[in-house]
Length: 151
Image 1 (tube, rainbow, N blue to C red):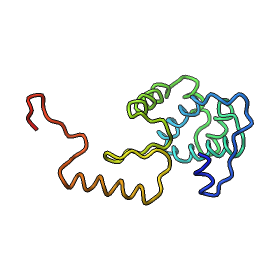
Image 2: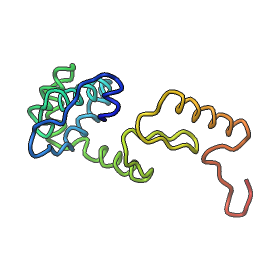
Image 3: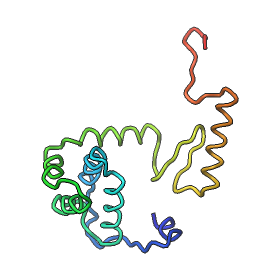
């Protein structure tokens, strides 16, 4: 996060919240926000709250206020997190990340190219062009043959 922030001219620091908060609820809150069309706004607000305002994203009251600040229904948000409505969806996202061996955020998969961290525009462009070229050559990602050898 820090190299990207420097590149973009954004001043961030590790919050002085101690111990570092357990953020499972924040991630479950993302699922609620995404379902209500505010996933991107939610993520932006959470990053700013954590890295620029040192807010404790492990606290339900903090998350609820931040969610309300971007236009989410505070009562609905709080109820969803209290009853664990999005817990399984978050666990599924973690399983999917593990299946793709994601260890850095972001990790971008473009065809056969794996990019960990924020790519430079030229790097992303090349990955996309390479994937398009593979498709044009008939090498389609995910294609498989049957057990009898037929394709």
